[in-house]
Image (cartoon, rainbow, N blue to C red):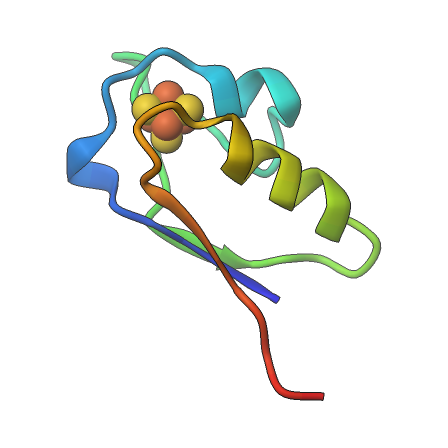
Length: 66
Ligand code: SF4
């Protein structure tokens, strides 16, 4: 599973960061720091919760073929 983030559209409300500080790090100005990452094994639920928490809907979950 991968996460893709439309970083430029982040408004900095830190909802994703509140779900997981490690998966969704913020920069010094409070905006999302990453434009995507490979979800570490076992962190899928957390990653999805973080994605759903974004009110701007700019965090996308990319499922891979098994
Ligand atoms: S929840 Fe969305 S808008 Fe808010 S900080 Fe995270 S990526 Fe940015």
